[in-house]
Amino acid sequence: MSLDVSLDVSLDVSLDVSLVPAIWNDLRCWWGGPLGRPIVNVTCFGPWNQGGGVLGISVEWGKLLFELPVYRVSPEQWHQEKDDAADRLRRMYETDEYKVSDSIIRGIMWETHGGVPFPYNQAIGWLRMIWDGPGAVIKAYAYRMRGRRFDLNFKPRAVEWIGKAFELWFVRDDNSETIAREIRSAILDTVRRGGSFPGRWIDLEAFDTLAPVIDFRRLIGLSPGC
Image 1 (cartoon, helix red, strand yellow):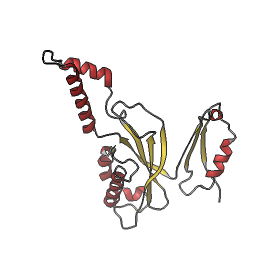
Image 2: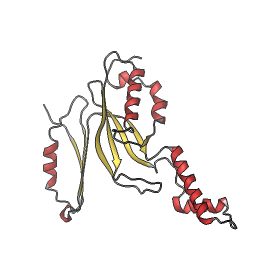
Image 3: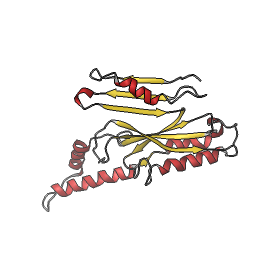
Image 4: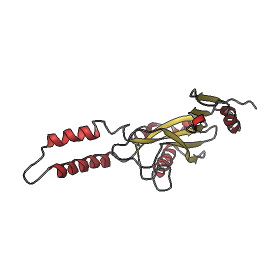
């Protein structure tokens, strides 16, 4: 059996590079399968010699199928938060004698919250789905920004690999509709209690648009068919 592993290492000049072989020894148990090389990323950045270094490792084995963004809240909740913020501003500045115009409120909101759109700017994580063939199995891996609290004006943070969010096995008799339905259900479970992103909102629009026309049986190594 041959070992075929792609190792992508990014090093800060202040990092003690002697740490990398030790990291590699911990990963050498992974070996290449019929799909070829696993996705192994080891990112080292420091300064380690000052006690502030961080080591990031992510391991995904197989072929990437989908990548879905996970948001802090839903678009509807986001709009409501902005409306509530505008109401608080109005109550703060208005008196019985003085009424604040909508244009002033919009100007303050722009200065306070910026004019950035919801997509991308409110994302706090990503879910990557991998076909871990040759068997009919799909695994999802979660990535999430550091920290637990994200308010309306949160600042982007480093993204960490959390690990496997779910694993789904399929059998010869499963049709594409069944596979798509089970994948969707597992995705939604990640934002429920006990999931990788509890209480968050995951954008399924692209998946829901494409799923009906995808031959999932062929995609995950089963014979083509409905």
